[in-house]
Length: 286
Ligand SMILES: [Zn+2]
Image (cartoon, rainbow, N blue to C red):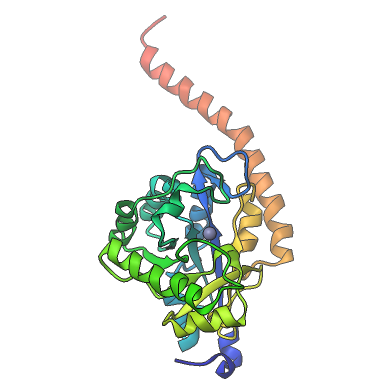
């Protein structure tokens, strides 16, 4: 495996944006962590329409390190195991053949506690998580109790990193992917080293708009959070490493013009079609 310091200039041009989602729900009001289902669908369709490669996170990191990564790619991740991910997001991913990574917590009791998306958001059971695996989507580890790890002693770190992985493997009947998501995206050098020593291949942490590259520490990968109020043009900036100010200046007026055009044209086209059908149906009437 190629180390961080061995990246060539070409490696650094291979860029990965890691998107972070929490809840995907029709009841999206109240907190920025809930993304409306229709908006999520439009975002996934945007990736497909723009032909932006979407990779499972572990594969993307391996490809970055081996210099076989596409020039740009996106990895889609979900934290905290909300049931609405299974109900709404998974079918959309499957219909568009998009891979993703689901991060789950080892302690079942944690599923009774409120997460950032709100306390009325039910979490998945292990049977639901198993369905993600059967759909070919990788499952990573999000700790044992979903607690901040910065000031933990060795024993507590072991529980969050090793015991959590063992419990998840027992519940699912297979080992999770060797990817860890630090709870609350918080880590320090000690936590990162413990994660590496525990046998993980990589870990996701803090939020940043910068893409990851072969130069990024695989145990300090940064993600870009997609919020419930993120419009599509802002999503394009989060998801596409090729995104730039000139593109924004072009995209926003272009999309507004297309939307305006649809608003004007659609009723006219619909009326014309209705008149045609009406003529065909009632053509023999006076
Ligand atoms: Zn979390």
